[in-house]
Length: 334
Image (cartoon, rainbow, N blue to C red; front, side, top):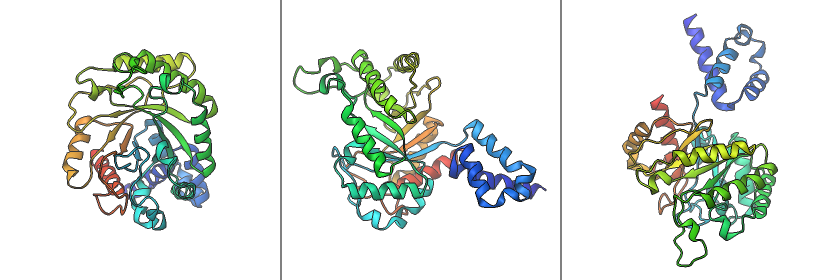
């Protein structure tokens, strides 16, 4: 009986990791043909699936291709890997969400985007949009996000299953240009103009995509040293809530040398961006993950000279290889 129970739990874990929701689990399980068998009759597998889902024991893994330190850039093999998807097969089974830079999507070909969307769909991988449009929006675009809405709708039309929108550095990117156009954005601790940018983005974009979760990628803890931005996060979370919106998530972007505790925000999934974790940095990545603690979301992302290639995923010096490494390290922590 013990062996049978372990088998049931292992099988339940397989379904949970593949489908991530009660509705999808039940539907796929029923379709599989096991619904009339011994496992379903005693209810053990369904009970265990509900246990996993209710306690959210599974952390999401996001992958973002390197832009090679170029705005709108992409890895050297952006097109080539789509001709040989088997070189990414292992990574694609582990990735929950593909983190697509909007700036990259605007520069690559429509055909490659459509092919990528089909590939992600075949692996049940969701898409998160990484956008910097809200950053300094008050002085750059007069807080008009109509163009952004059009681009996101176009990507949905290509076949991307967009579940998240991440406002990149909307709180933490200081304005350094030698002009007087955006002086209110030079001080990171002057939250008011950035707060208005965030509220304006939600007010215009969220009603157009009601089923998409909008959140923030933030480097404020690293940019301001030991300053704890907890008050800022709580202000934003409560400000959105009273207006009928929700801070969908908060992704911390800090270097691996960062040693200040990262606080959680009420009612908000918290994630961590892991950068420069390729190749021989395995021990460093593991140490960072262990030090930083457990999070709801882990993101592999780079904006450096390397890694230049995204595949094959058997090579830890590629971005997909690094994502596999991070997945396995997270598994070690459980």
